[in-house]
Length: 157
Image (cartoon, rainbow, N blue to C red):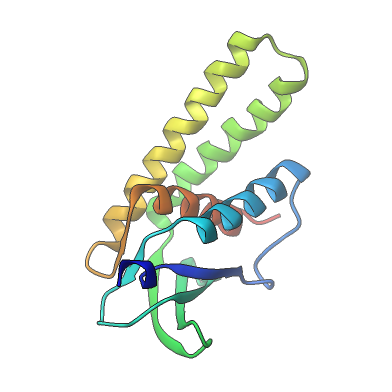
């Protein structure tokens, strides 16, 4: 059964997704690819996977639209984004500095920014796990990758 409690497809809502820099688009593609390859995703309610996940924003809420492998709606889980706002903002500021530093900064500066980026990413994953408690069970790696997608959806043009 564990092999069925996973995501097999993830899509971000085109209406709220804006075109980002090549680096951010790459992060999105990698997060989705890695999520499909390895994840643990168990929505509460006794549903049988595998699952399709559609992520969208509605009125400052992140909606997890969870569907069966045949694209039949199963349930929706909403999270307020208020708790994520400053974390997402800080994460993107550090990411921008990191991508700029890659071009010109010494390795020590790049490494320091990368450590900061990873720490914020871990903090976001931990917050996501806390907010989904009792609604969706994830492992930490899945939460990290979903946090990447939350950042991309949350920050608009």
